[in-house]
Amino acid sequence: MSEINWLDMHKHATTTLEGEFNVVVVRTEVKKTNDQTKDMIKYTAKIESGPFVDRPITGNFTISPDSPVAMRILFAHWAVLGLDSKFFERYPNATLDQIADTLIGRRAVVKIGTRPWQGRNIEEIQDWKPALGGPGGGATSLGGAGLDGVLGGNTGGPLGGLTTGPGSPR
Image: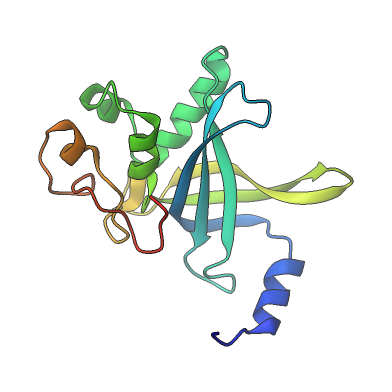
């Protein structure tokens, strides 16, 4: 078993983050909402710099076709991660699993705040902004299963290949 730094673990567990942080999406999973009525992509992003480097931030991208406002927000967040209208023009029939795979390795700047939940404040991402370098922030370092290999396009570039990033369940 590897050594555990209890001081760092305590700091991460007891400090509520607020502010802007550079993150990279490191894991995704396609699931249903608790009531089983909607699809969603659960994600884990990790903070890339500063005193909270490697701290995980989790959340969901919920697919709500019955709500144009919710879908507008979803597509705006995905556009920050490089899945913009050009992406969907190229891959109009991408599966949710393929989209989830493509999100891995994507970078952004996120604004983290808190909201009340079951009598306590929890952290949540309140806004997504493009990483330095533009949408998705050069999502090549952790891989990310690309749609090009699946859908017959060029296998090079940030969407290329069929392998996923290290440590990813995908």
